[in-house]
Amino acid sequence: MKNFIINKLEYLKKRNIKIEKLFFKKLLIKNKNKFKTVSNEYYYLNNINILFEKWKKKKKKIKKIFLSLNKNKNKNKIKIINKYIKNIKNKIYELLLPKNYKDKLNCFVEIRSGTGGNEASIFAGNLFKMYNNYAGFKKWNVEIININNGDHGGFKEILIKIIGKWVYKNLKFESGGHRVQRVPETETQGRIHTSTCIIAVIPITPEVNKIKINNKDLKIDTFRASGAGGQHVNTTDSAIRITHLPTGIISECQDERSQHKNKSKALSILYFRIYAAKNEEINKKKNLIRKNLLGSGSRSDRNRTYNFSQDRVTDHRINLTIYRLHDIIEGKLDLLIKPLIEKYKNNKLKKIFKI
Image (tube, rainbow, N blue to C red; front, top):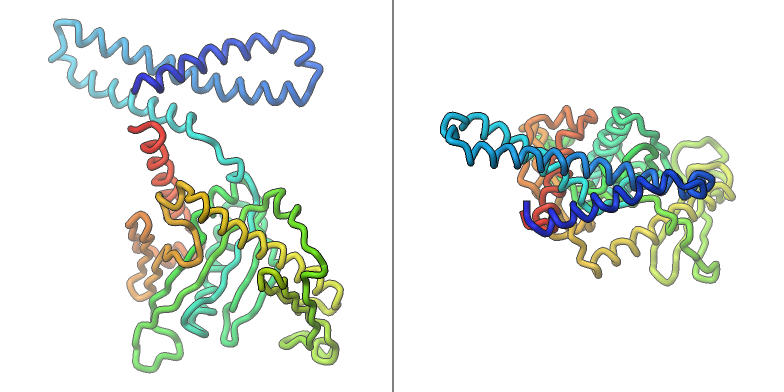
């Protein structure tokens, strides 16, 4: 372990002792918010300190073996201890990594069909099924915010809200381009077609609700809804289309029978899209670490290829290929997500701690 990391750990050890002494002060016990903050810090520091003490003990043990005359006889023992030391060290590094408060947040997921016409819409339906099933495995709740159905199945676009534990942490690398290669049902000569979908994953931060939109910047149009819904849908102008004039961003809704409800829903979608656009622009300007490690997450990035004929999924960012496409579509998405998170974490460790 490098000296600057050891010095950091020694400082945290002193801080841990100092925090521990605060628990004996009555003023702290009376202040619930302060007590919670101090308790969380103590828990965090104490975990690091326990690992640091274990690391130091094992290092001393190795040193004693090397100083003894039985060094050659204890080769296997040295190997086992070194493996243990490495494991502790990795746990310490992980605890020292900067925390991203957004990882705990719920998020919006927007799936939009790209190139490929009807096949792209059908693929968007497959991707929705994949994320919906994955949410089920994780015991998350999925709320459909808006749907624009495809002409021959699937969706031209669908916006969902996912609520649960560590949602954004698990889904944040899904943003970008997803490509499918397969023979469409309408293909008579058995040729493989390539279609694409674009996914945007946006954490639901307090900033989403703080976006201010001037009513003067909105152009609101009503039109007659199409599709299922009975006579009411086809005879009244209940559907709403809202255009945000400064950005040109458009949202529309025709799901509800009431024009008022459609307007409310269309505004929610507009807020999401304006925030998503701002978030993407901020990420570009800041040149985030994530861009260097796993792509910017922008809509132009190609994340994965799903090849149905070979039962293969390839994540191009980490050169990972898995021949379990149908399992992944059925919701076993951790097969891809866990290696992504691990790669991202390891790259951050290398960058920050130069290991």
